[in-house]
Image (cartoon, rainbow, N blue to C red):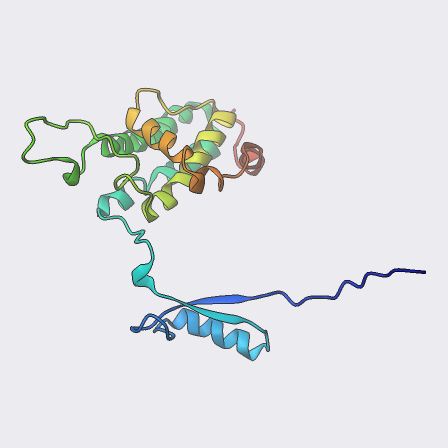
Length: 205
C-alpha cells in the first residue's frame, strides 16, 4: 500500500489595503491605491481589498518641523567622511560629521515646549524625552534612526569613529531606540552593514 501526499499549488494570497472614504468603509480618494487596484485587476490577479480608516490609525507625523530637519545632513556628512581616501583631509570630514552630531545632540537635550510647565517653579533645562519629537516614535525617527545605526557600525569599523560619550542627548536617544522592538528588531546585523560598506569605505593614503 502506497501513500502519496499531493502538494496542491496554492495561489499566493494578496491583500490590498486602501484608504477608506468618509464613511470609514468604502474606498477613499487615493490615486496610488487606485492605480495598484487597476493593475492587479487588469493582470487577472486574485486579491482581497481592505479599506483602512486613516483617522483611527496612529498618527506618526511629528508635531515639530525641527524634528524632521535636525538630522537631515548627518548621513551626507557620513558618506563624504567614509568615502574620503586622503588622510590629510580626514580630520575636516570628521569635524563636519561631528558638527551634525552636535546639532542633533543640542536639539535632543533642549526641552520641547510641551516639556516646559509654565506653572512649575522648577526650570527644566535638559530634555528627558525619549525620541526626536517626544516620548513616541514618529516618522522623523523612522527616517533618522536607520541612518544613525549605519553610521554607528560602519564608521567604527572603517574609521574607528565613535559617537562621543559626552553627547548625552544622542546616546539617550539611541539607547531608547534600541530598547524598542520596532527599531531593534528591524535593524540589519552588523555584518550586513560592514559588508555593504567594505567596497564604499576608501582606504586612506
